[in-house]
Length: 209
Image: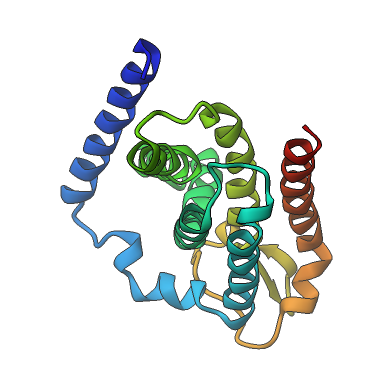
């Protein structure tokens, strides 16, 4: 690693330590230990789209032309994005409306960066013995995918509201119990298209060269 990469690594390790401290000193249970969040997350349409996305990210790895993209990081980055992105991205929107604290926003930012970059970086350091030279392009592409996933899995529908974002509600994780996927696609297709364009662009650019 060069001096910048060493300094950057120290920075994000320190950020993770601060996150652990914030989490450990919280009075209420952490969001990922709350039953209501998992009920919100494990709805059939979300599990189905997650499974399809993860399968794609894993199976395409050997054909992507990116030596840093393998079965392992394709899998763990997909799983952790599904678990964390809906809360992390929603927290930023709530912060804008002053419905989330700066402590929560800091945790959300660290989760975003950890999933979009830091986990990828440390995995490749352990796998290859050096800091990945692709960390900046990966951070940019993965951040767009993380944002799209977080917004997409926050989409909800209700008879009196039509399609909306769950984080707009006072009770964030309340949801309509009936089938909603087709209705949600009226707004959700743009996030699916964005993800496809980003992934397609990355694969094409790598294989053309």
